Length: 323
Image 1 (spheres, rainbow, N blue to C red):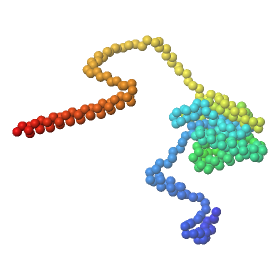
Image 2: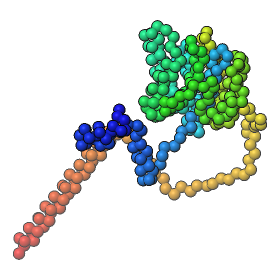
Image 3: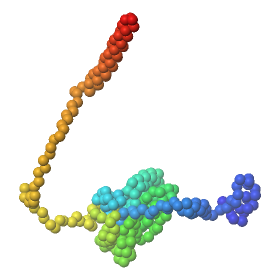
């Protein structure tokens, strides 16, 4: 890399095809985007993730939480899907965004972490998992729709990482991502403190996820929790039912044949023409017969024409001989 003051000298020594070699940022894409907007192209729209995921640090470890609703636009495709993914025995990850992207990202990272543990022969640090996730996401420049909240406990203590689809990350004591972020973060900012015990931390995560569920249509159904400590991880599947199915208040008991008949009308139909159509049992044979009839009919017509010609010739010959 060349410094700005050395760029002109270096450009003189290079060939004539290379002009103005400089270091720093490149804004070619910004000019391209401005030209595309001027031509009438619409910029890409932001996509709603449709999820509420939360992670906090408490006095003994980490607690992760997520809802269980999966959506396809306005349609609820799955009411009880798992959004907390296993990376290692002491590292778990919550995923928001495209379900396939989050699933494959966590599967590939889990395999890489297993190989790392086999090669080094020691426990994988949490920061190593964060680095692998960030490298892959940054390589694809945000085209992988995976917003992750990763938590784990290693020899340095409990850690929470908030990893964005573009590859950036935040290391914070509590995090929330997904479409229910605003409601969940308001609960966390109001009630979180570093000396929370296990039950208080679980209750705080439940309240944060419930706030996201009740304030966002893309989140719903149940609440899953994962408690990670130095001793291991405890995955609590369907810990709480956030939005229960409502019951029908009105009861409709209509007996059979009890519908009231208000009027009766009969229409008389007059049949003017009746046609019946039949299909042969052997279609191939019927087609052959039809072809034979057509050829036979053609031969008969030719014969009739020949007879007429002979009669005309005879009659003409007799008229010529009479004089």
